[in-house]
Image (cartoon, rainbow, N blue to C red; front, top):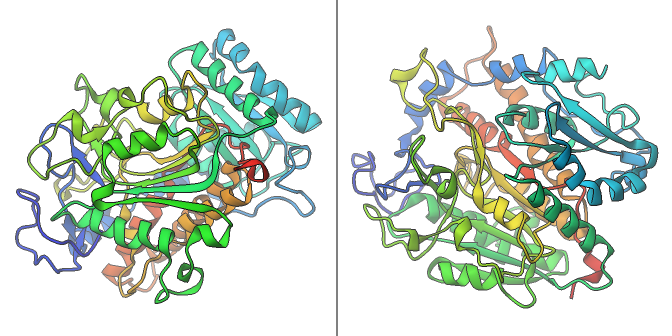
Length: 493
């Protein structure tokens, strides 16, 4: 992220002016030191890494030689109708019978809606995306719901079905994932979705709630508050196109805004426990990072840092919202949440993006003993009073640099706005994410590969960093939950 208010103690940015636009920020705070999890770096530093280690060849190897782009559904197929688009569930080949049985309230409902286009599929240990495609006799970019349904729900943790499989499948398909620790949690989610879709009355307000921190001396939250939350919530007549108008006004929703000093832990808990909670919750903050294998890593990683945090160099559990902070009397039924935060969705085993030139050519540095899902979304989806419908969140670090591209004065946040707008219209959540972030990931991957190809004109460092960071950012947005869930907009109060 660019444009810091000031420099954090020991942030590694001391030589850079507070008004410099050369620093790239990452939305993560170390849960033990209270410092940036990754120190801000200059565009020149990132450009050297992007040229040496663009991280696109591994994606091409996983997917195959086909150019990374999405062709969408065939003509005449309505993505709004499961009987046209289909719905499938992907179990690991070793998934327990208990988990399969626990999901029956959901699979029975989807089978009835999709008819012959309902399929139960499997994933074999170690299978790469290209192998899975070949086994099902399909090619990337050739979506045919009669062969593979458009809506696909992956079931199981990322140490069994890798994150990379989900990322790449999400270029062509609307993909979601459920990953819980016990069969009864799968049952709780399935029953909650089935109850929401059959209920005669919906508790949620026709409202989007925004919650975003803004910490003194922190360039990352300065940018996310001013150029992400503020234009979404308030619009800006000086910006281009639809960003002039507040998002909720365009789609007939009300708005709740908790920004800066108002974005406290208590305020967020109050929203999650409201008698009539918002249908959509969008947050922008730092996510917490805990060292690999530390005792609290799975419980705390990806927790949302709140405005209660006094600043760099100190950190306490009271300063962030973790899964354990969500009480049993919270009111989460019918909620779609979107977390813009590092590790808000999960953590891979190794760091996907080398940020230290000394590490080039060596093994990727570890982030965790095994990849895992973030605990906070799991808690929301499996809440004992009824879970959220879906959580959209980021796996690995959130690269907020794409909020404001170099040489542009305004916010560049169309994927956020468009995906939220689609959800407000009542579109399936997985389709909204695939259509915006999956499409952007594919387009930027193609552009980056072309720019780095032998014989291609040399790309300016700043433009290269823009493509690289935007691509990495778009790749890792995932839907947690059934991708076919949608808001019952006409029933919202």
